[in-house]
Length: 185
Image (cartoon, rainbow, N blue to C red; front, side, top):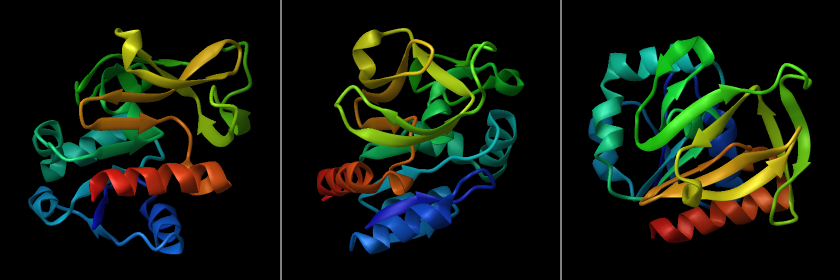
C-alpha cells in the first residue's frame, strides 16, 4: 500500500487516480502516525514552498519525513521540499538532500510548462518555476534541458524525487510509478 501525503499544497487526487488506474493500492494519509501503515510514500506537490512548509509543520510532518526509512518519492514541489532551502518565499525546507532550490532564469518563460525531453530520451510533463540545485551532483538521476541542463530527478538513500509529474506524463510516468511501487513491495 502506497501512502499519498495530504497537505494543503499537494495534488493528491490526480496522483491517487493515476495509481488506481495502474492497479496500485494507495491511500491518502493526513497524519504522520499513518506512515507505519504503508510500504512507501508519495509526496505530491503543487503550490508554493513557504505555504507548503507551514502546512507540513502544522501537522508535524517534517520530523516524521526526515526519519522515514521506506521508499519515499517527492513529486515537483514534493521533490523541492526535500532540499535545504528554497528561494521561493525564502523557505527553510526539510534538509534531507543538501542543496538549494533556485528560480528559473528570468530570461526564460516561467513557469516551465509542458512536455520536455528527459536525459533518458523520454518526454515528461513539467510545471515549475524553480529548480533543484544539489550540492552533490551524484544524487542527480536525470536531467532535462530548459535554458540549460536542469535537475529533473534525484535519489539519496530511500528518498527519490522528480521535478516532473509522473501522474500526467503518460507511458513514461506510468512506468516510473510502477517501478516505485515494485520498490515498495
